[in-house]
Amino acid sequence: MHLVYIAIFGALGCLSRFMVSGWVYALIGRALPYGTLAVNVIGSLLLGLLMEGGLRSAALPADIRMGITTGFMGGFTTFSTFSYETVRLLEDGSMVAAGANILLNVTVSVVFAGLGIFLARQL
Image (cartoon, rainbow, N blue to C red):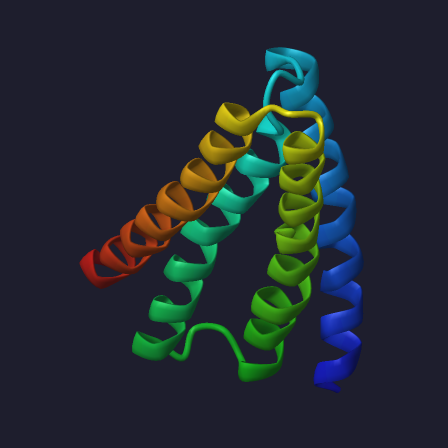
C-alpha cells in the first residue's frame, strides 16, 4: 500500500512545486533560480520536521509518513533542477550567480533541515 501513497503524494508534491516555484518567480523574478531555491528550502524544513517528528511519534502511520516524505517531499524538492539551472548559469558566464545559487541552495537547505529537526524536538 505504501507505493500507492508514494505515487499519490508524489503527484501532489510535483504540482505543489510547480505552483510554488511559479509564484516565487512571479513575485521575485528570475535573476537567480529563486523558485527552485524556495521549494528546496521549504522542503528541507518540512522533511527535517516530518522525519524527526516521525521518529518521536506514531501519530502518522508508517505508510502515510513514507508517502509524505518520499512521495510528496521527493516530488516537491528538486536537486536535478537546481543542478541544471546552475550549469546554465555557468554556461551563460554568470559565475557569481552560479556560485550564489550553489551556496544558497546547499547552505540554506541544510540550515532549514536542521531547523525542522530542532522544531520537531520542541513538540
